[in-house]
Length: 76
Image 1 (cartoon, helix red, strand yellow):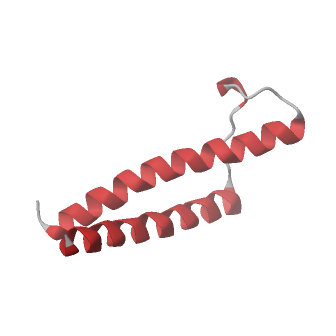
Image 2: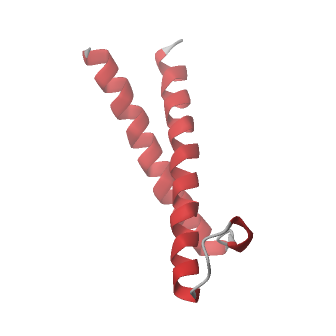
């Protein structure tokens, strides 16, 4: 696998995992505020600016993770 492909795979996998975690934390906070049980039926998806902010944070973290993984592997 080329270095560029490896970066995209590492970043993509990290994005999926981090975004899933972000959605869980987002919903946990909403459910705690509303005093609702933590159930899949209570999950909501952020809209508008909230979604854009969440995705921006996760894209940034995923890209950084991809770069760090690539850099560490090159050093090893």
